[in-house]
Image (cartoon, rainbow, N blue to C red; front, side):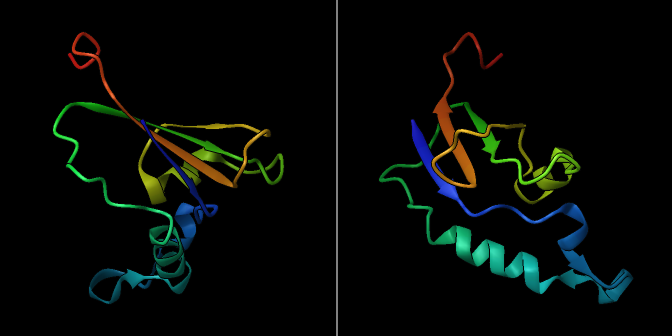
Length: 100
């Protein structure tokens, strides 16, 4: 199991700027990707089996939409008020029966 404590992901509304050919990553999203990268350590060997990702976020206010936060990470997520960080990601190899 790999556990990552990451900074709070930006809303889906804050990922890009512009439209069409001028669309690009926003400074907010670039900063989050850079900051999150500091907490991610490359495993000694690649994960070459089916795996599950679980994300829990510390809810900052009751009006937030968790789906807008998932767009930066693209995973299933849940709110959890008892976290050691703003965003906790757990990567776990699946059992063979679960992978189907």
